[in-house]
Image (cartoon, rainbow, N blue to C red):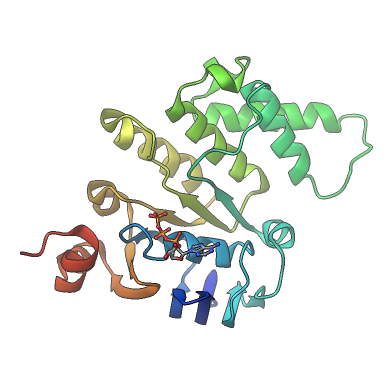
Length: 247
Ligand code: ATP
């Protein structure tokens, strides 16, 4: 089976800092992968490399077999890798629905001059809001919405393109502790309907253990653990360099 995402021999340096070293990962379609690691371990660099915000110094990145190593972020988004951000990227003066309509319109294959295009965009935007239980917030400006709601809106907007691969940078950061599981339930149910492959950066190991099929543990730009959550979270290196549980 062709991997949804394939990263082979990827290296990235910033001067003397090795942010990615010898990264090799094949992600099968539909897998839910959590990226873990201490601050500065290389998780965001990995996300930025895969989404075209950074170019690797060496190595190849493929989406469903297609080489995207030198493609830019817009082209990669169009090809089917979409992302949400640690800090949601929203127009705070606009309402939740207006933000969603903008995402849907931007995802339309070409500038459409059909009479009903605008109505179709509004319908699709409302459908996506409903999928995340965000209808009660549809007509409120984003600037008055709580952090957890903004987070869900940002993720919902990333789904506007029916992505093949979805990267979520800390989907539960800024979400109240007691709401984290409910937020992840909502995200996984909504994204699961698209059958997308998901990679999510996460610091909360209960969320990692609860929602990932596979964990990639990063340390100093390298992957030091790759496998099922129970295996990776139990490994001595991961306890020492990631979760800080080693004595
Ligand atoms: P965090 O959990 O804090 O977001 P991270 O695991 O995402 O950390 P990265 O942001 O990928 O880590 O950073 C990996 C290393 O690369 C760090 O040492 C960081 O300082 C460095 N780095 C990342 N981006 C740049 C950049 N644009 N210029 C210089 N150094 C960078």
